[in-house]
Length: 372
Ligand SMILES: Cc1cc2nc3c(=O)[nH]c(=O)nc-3n(C[C@H](O)[C@H](O)[C@H](O)COP(=O)(O)OP(=O)(O)OC[C@H]3O[C@@H](n4cnc5c(N)ncnc54)[C@H](O)[C@@H]3O)c2cc1C
Image 1 (cartoon, rainbow, N blue to C red):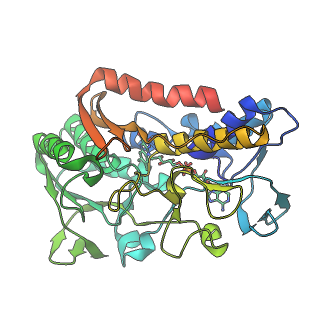
Image 2: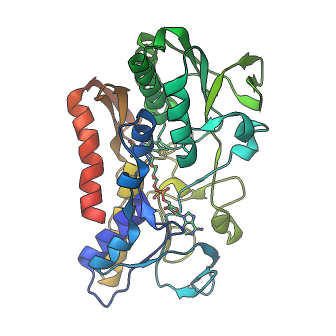
């Protein structure tokens, strides 16, 4: 369920290893796939949605079935997924539904901001920043956890870069508000400090420990204090899709809790990617990122393949990966992550360069070629 990062990785891994009489089906309410990272390129004007999306139907060429319908009910007892039009029986079920954006959880947020992660709002942000001549842009993380921890910082840096091109940069103040004390808790204090310095070098002021409580026209309110803005770009709270809560896989207000095997408490039912929560230590969870959704999809697929072939199931999610930190003008850094290194997760920021920008482009291209 879900033809995003995790679902596509899992389905392709399964298809490559299983005979054709094993039916593999992707169910997605959208008929297209586009990596979320492209939203930042739409924001800068480097890309358009229409030319960046790929039809999910393309998986059928490889022998993966595609059903373009919304899953409305999961009946775990009878092993059936329902849509409005059909009932699908399964032997193995991979939940890869991602997260839903929930701006409604913060009063006034939807009405008074543009949502960075919302495809419809990204082009509006693009229009606003290209016309803006002076004033204050506030960027606020308003809920935790959120997808791709470095992405809001990338967005801030890319917006600064667009403003430099339009010539308005020196008359536009940029402020970044986060409920966390440091920029990137998932990356640790060292990486957070490096990101802080990159923001400073671009005249973007970071305000940590600012938990947004409500938004009014041109006013952002925090647990303590408030600030004005001319344009608010927000990262809203995220929530698990209702269909995963209704069937008991996730507790209300929480993600689906699994360990490194991504097995849920229901036999042959797995949860991968943003929809799940994998705790690494009692305080640190695996960040919500496409690279990890992919790794978890491959892990689960390998274990299903082993089970079908009556072999030992030996795969566990390795927690290795990384996210790019694009800084503008076709330059990017790379945050390398090893979630299960002992005694604590390792993260390091590789200095921004044009090589990492090329790697980011390759990251998208290679997966599109492989999956669709
Ligand atoms: C701006 C931005 C930049 C990012 N940059 C990076 C990056 O550089 N590197 C990186 O690794 N990650 C990045 N990410 C994070 C990454 O996009 C996500 O972590 C990743 O998409 C998660 O994959 P997933 O398979 O769990 O969910 P998704 O890719 O979100 O897929 C979920 C799918 O489920 C479908 N679905 C949901 N509900 C239903 C339903 N009821 N019935 C049927 N279908 C349903 C959805 O339509 C969707 O296609 C970025 C995110 C953002 C927002």
